[in-house]
Structure formats: C-alpha cells, structure tokens
Length: 58
Image (cartoon, rainbow, N blue to C red; front, side):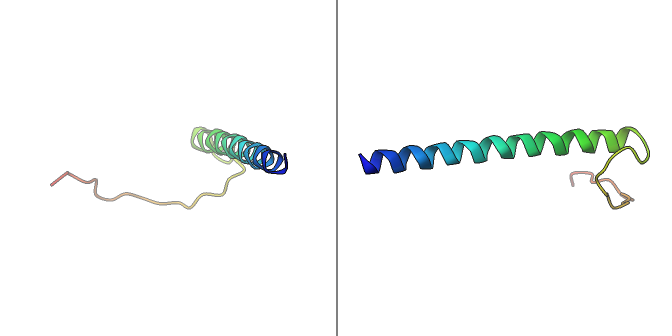
C-alpha cells in the first residue's frame, strides 16, 4: 500500500508542475504579444535588437 501511495503522490505532483508550466508559458506569450502591439504596454523588459541582414538560405 505504501508504494501505491508514493506513486500517486509523484504522479500528482508531476501533473501539478506540468499544469503550472503551461499557465506560465501562456501568460508569457500574452505579455509578449501585448509588448509588440503597443509601446510600454507589457510588463516584460525586452532588449532592443535589430536585424541588419536577413538570412537567404544559401
């Protein structure tokens, strides 16, 4: 009975961690879109970067 209880606890803990990771990833995606849509609209701090040459595939 003890092994079953430990297995259930481990599986439950892993499920909670996976769900929390999905929620954080979704929240970060929303914040990134808000930051791109308007100046100063996001809580995320992003570095200003520029792409001078786009890759050509060669």
